[in-house]
Every structure is written in structure tokens, then in C-alpha cells.
Amino acid sequence: MDIIHIREDDEAFQQFLTSRLRAFNDVHSAHHRAIRNADVPVVQLKVERDGQVIAGLFGSVYWGWFDLDRLWVDSNHAGERIGTRLLEEGERHARALGATQVKLTTFSFQAKAFYERFGYEVAGVLRDYPPGSDYYMMTKRLTDA
Image (cartoon, rainbow, N blue to C red; front, side):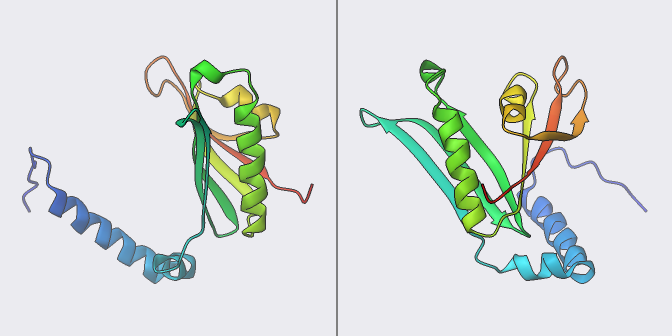
């Protein structure tokens, strides 16, 4: 058996590995099998001012979860409650699509304290990732409120 170090970026090899992992997951998880070809609903919100995007949110809903992938507010508009409004509206849309929980990730230099103010809890942390910072997975149970 030879282990070969591939020195260049090999997209075909990466796709090969992805296809093999997906095939394994499909055999062992009915949830993965069902979602593979499903039309996964997304929540996309943006805020524009003077024709420029100054904030946005993107996430998808599957398995009863809102996977909040991105929430960004231009730093020139900090303190205007735009992030709060986006988060609340995103959660509302996710609930309407059947989500009962939310998951997201954030770094210690990003928005951990912001999410905690809205009831998000740390589910896991990678310390010193990247060096000098921490990486958090956070979750929240959605209510009907």
C-alpha cells in the first residue's frame, strides 16, 4: 500500500472523496438520503440603503433546524439595531418553514455576545482556533413567540 501526497489542488480527487462520504451517509442515514435531492428552503434577507447592501442574512432549513450560515452588518451601521432586526426576522421565517431550532458558528472576535443576548447557547468550542481566538458552535430552541 502506497500513500501518495498530492501536492497540487486536485478538484477531481476532492469530489471523489465527497461522493464516497455522501454514499456512506446515504446508506447509514435516512435523513441524509432524503435531503440529498430535496428542495431545501432558504432564508435570505438584505438591507439596502442608498442602493448599497449594508447588511444581510442567509441560512437554510432542514431536519427541523435553521442553519444560520451568515449574518453581516456593515460596521458603519453598527448600533442601528440592524443585526437584531435581521436575526429576529430570520428566525421568524425559519419558524414558518418548520424550524424548531437554530445552529450557527461564530468566532470570539465576531458576535458571540450578540447571539447570547438572544438566547443562543454555546454547544461546543474550539479553543485557539485561529490562534488567539476561539470558534463557537451555538444553538437556540425557537419558540412560537
